[in-house]
Amino acid sequence: MEQVIALFTLIILEVVLGLDNVIFISILAARLPAHQQQKARRLGLIFAMILRLALLGIISLILKLEGNLFTIFDQGISGKDLILIAGGLFLIYKSATEIHHKMEGEEGDDSKVIKAKSFRSVIGQILILDLVFSVDSIITAIGMVNELWIMYVAVIVTVTIMLFAAEPISAFIHKHPSFKMLALSFLLLIGFSLIAEGFEYHIPKGYIYFSMSFAFLVDIFQMKMKPSKTPPVQTHEHYLPGEEKLVENAEGKNVRPL
Image 1 (cartoon, rainbow, N blue to C red):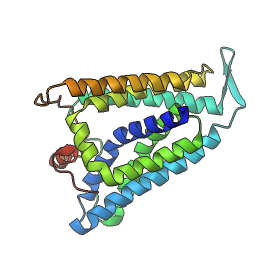
Image 2: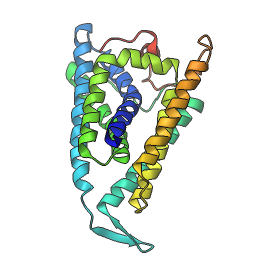
Image 3: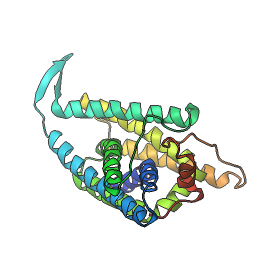
Image 4: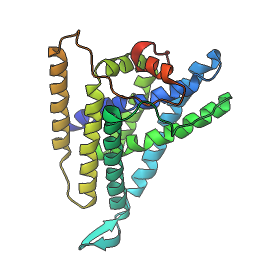
């Protein structure tokens, strides 16, 4: 039963966190002729799945390195511990900066200056973005579950959902941004648990699943009790320079079908 809960929770979290990946793929694909855009979007998501599965395989091998590399305060640190600690720090940094950006940051992202003129160059840029977005996705999966098969199934199911349901999911998150903030908060929890595990302090996964499920149910109750006419908080979103209108569409107003 715990494995089913872990799989279901991981899929939901990966879907919510994967929307930014879909938005950037849509932005890049929109620079192509109309007849190539759908193909580019679908290839982008398929490549994202392949990259995630490949990274899972590589990291799972690294996590088998149990021999200590050095000692800190009488605590042996192995290759596995280094991956867990580094991954935890990365998740805490990524989620904290993303929360700050959405609540107090500025619109757009000038650091992502991407030029794409041909189908091949667009696919190349999508692969780079997929790799960037895959890192936190894989670290999150490792922090939530121990079984590799659950991680693989979650990745495949998540990408399949995004292929066919990106538009309604994006519209829902745009209407209820608290779910995105909740998912980012979960990353803080997962990042902390990874660091603790790296130092041999193991937090039972059931505690993490319970806290996530409880917070998720509270958010659902609040959503149901909130008057439907009350407008949601407008969070700041990422977009490439000159692509403000497309991101506005990708956030739920006029999403191009995948």
